[in-house]
Length: 107
Ligand SMILES: [Zn+2]
Image (cartoon, rainbow, N blue to C red; front, side, top):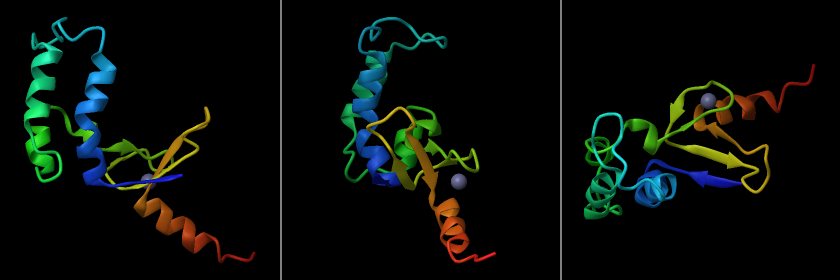
């Protein structure tokens, strides 16, 4: 399992974009923008210091958050479980907190 934070998502955004569009970097998206132009904008950011807003000016907020398997909301921070297996799933901090309380229920 691995901790994910807003910063870890930001730091990974350019590499994730490149992976997703690696064979289609010159094929226009539905909005007419080329994926390679977006990649160049992401690479121009300092991903160690830029803000989430800097990234979402370029790509949608979904790129700096994962969807929690429990509450189904986009959340920037939480734990990714079982990344090396097909049952991979992300659980957000709010749901981890609830789970921690449930641990102590005895009935
Ligand atoms: Zn959740």
